[in-house]
Length: 470
Ligand code: MN
Ligand code: MN
Image (cartoon, rainbow, N blue to C red; front, side, top):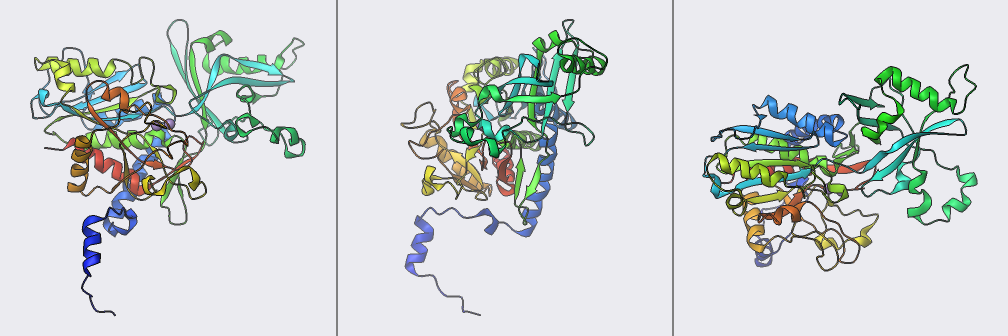
C-alpha cells in the first residue's frame, strides 16, 4: 500500500488545463456497464430486423407505437406531450414529441440515416449464362467491391405489381432459407486478376448474384435454368419477369449482429452506418418524456448516394413537417427552424491501428472513448461541410458534460486522405445550428462493421440529454 500522495502543482495544472480523452471503460462502474450491455441487446435486435431502410422504418414505428406515438395527419391539433410520427413512403421517418415551450423557441433534432451500402438488383436483373441463373446488380453507395464476393448474401425488398399490390421478399435470413453468393476466381488462376488495382479486382459488372443452376424439367427450349427460377418465383410470389421493373430488391449480408472479442466489448454487424445512430436517436425520443423543446427524430434514406430524392435529406419533407407543426400553433415554420438545433447523427471513422497513416491521432476518434462530435466533415479545405459554429459546439459540450455523457472528438481522417459528408449540411442549410455527433466505426461500409458498445450507449445518452435540455 502506498500513501495517498499529494498531487504536484504540475499534476494539478495538467488536470485543469490539458484536454485528455480517456477510454470510457476506465470511467464506467460495473452497474453502468450492465446498462450499456443491456441497451446493446436491444440495438442488436433492431439491427437484425432492419437490414434495409424500409425495415428500419417498420421496426422504428413498432417501437414508437409501443410508447404511444400515433400517425401524424395534416392539420392535426397538437399540444405539449403529443407524440406523432410521419412515415415518408415507407423509407424515411419523422418522430416528434411536442414540448412545453412555445414552438417558436425552436426544436431539438436528431437526424440519422437508415440506408446502408449494398447491392441493388438492376431493373432487368434475371439472366442465364452457362446454365447458371443470376441476378445482375448495381451497387448502392461506397463499397469495396471485392468485399462482396464469396460471402453468404440475402435478398430483401419489395416487388410491386402493375395493379399496385406489393409482395415483400426476404430470402436468406431464416435458418432454413437458402442464401445467395457472388463467386470469385480461385487463386490458382487469379494471377492476372491479382495484378489489377484493388478497386478493379472485382468490377461493378462482375457483381452477379448466383441464384440457381437447375433447368426446368422436360424442357427443350432455351434458358431453361432462368425459366425454372421464374417458375419458382411465380409459384412463391405470384410475380412475372416484368414485375422486376417495379421492384426494390437489395442484396445484403445474411449474418446477424454478434458480440466481437473475448471481452464482448464490440458489436460486429452489417449496416452500423447508420443504424447505430438511428436506433439511439429513436430510443432517445422514446425516453425523453415531454421535453421543454419539441423533440424531432429523423430517419432519412439515400444518404449513401448523396441525400437526393424525396426520401433523402435534401428533400423538403422535414421543412414541410416543421411548417405543419408550426401551423398547428399559428406560427411559421422558418421561425421555428432558425431557433432549432440539430445533432446530425452519423458515424465517423475510428482510428484503426493497422492503418494509422490516414489519421492524425490527436484528432482521431477511438473506439470505447464515447460518442464522437465532429465539428466538420468534408475533405481537404473543408469542402462540402456545414462546419458547426464555436457557439453551438460550446452549447453541445456543456449539455454532454452536465449529463455525464462520455464523448470525444474526431475528424474524418487526414486533411488530404479523402473525406466524406453527412446530412448535416442539408439541415444546416435550413438555418438550423447543426453538428455531427455519432458513433465511431471500424471497417466502415464493409459487409461487417465494428462499433463499441460503450459508444453506442453514449450516443443514446447524448441524444437524450440534448432533447431534454431546458
Ligand atoms: Mn453514414
Ligand atoms: Mn456511410
